[in-house]
Length: 242
Image (spheres, rainbow, N blue to C red):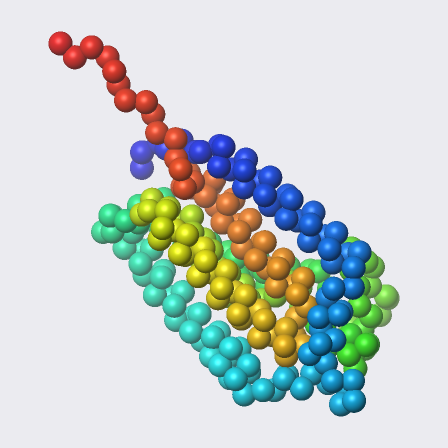
């Protein structure tokens, strides 16, 4: 595989953007009650439950249905990546195929690992919403003996946000299609995340951090595989041709 330079300017811009977004998310959700206020809109204090938790559309279509669709679509996309790896697709070079395949695997995998490590609970587990656990900020210490939570970041939304990696992988095929992939991944993850929020399964911060993680992994993989959207190409040889 030919040597390819990385567009460091693009990477620096992305790192600055990711850092600014992380700082903003930390400040917003650590020092405000936005998560709780939004979750309260979907909670019925009289019934002491989230009425939409078992709604047929949210449960059958947006949760279970979209999860199965995501599995099938990812499997199909991995076949496309294999074709790109074999050099059979002009619009998907080998490096970009590796980037897309790795991202689709690592984004949900890393999200799942973080869910097991962060020990944060779903809204329906919080005391104010009829549960057993206190609402904690990202860096707050959980009380001793409290049953561990596995709700942060949002796993279901990551099945939509994993398509963000195609926003980088398809850059070589044109900016328009790359932007469509970015917008599609954001919309799909947002819809899937919003459905779970209405059910009381996730806070807004869980979904937004899931999107941040997906893009951070995509940027990291683009550097690893040398598949940044605007690769630096060596200057043409202007030596005298006599």
